[in-house]
Length: 144
Image: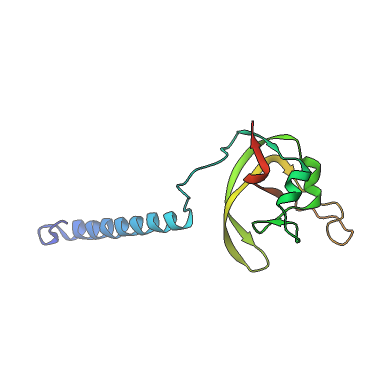
């Protein structure tokens, strides 16, 4: 810390501004660490890695009565991709839940490149134009 008494008035203002900026930068760094927190654990699939989606029968065995595995829904429209080879686009850590209006932390979920919902007949027979990405549990995937 500088001794402000020995500085000129303009230098004192500049020093005060630098100290405030340094505190703000520290706070922003801490805030960004909290917002963009990353699990430092094992990453099962990395970006660009080739994976094979398990067969539909194998995935079906993991699902509960609501067609979910660890609270992630497996939609029937995803079945057409089963058995195919695809590239991992990225790992999913956070998702915005539109029903509860909350950010939810995810575990063991990835997005595969090029696999998007076509939206045909989704809304009571009407088409949807959102082109949402399908989420895949890592348990449904096999490394190649």
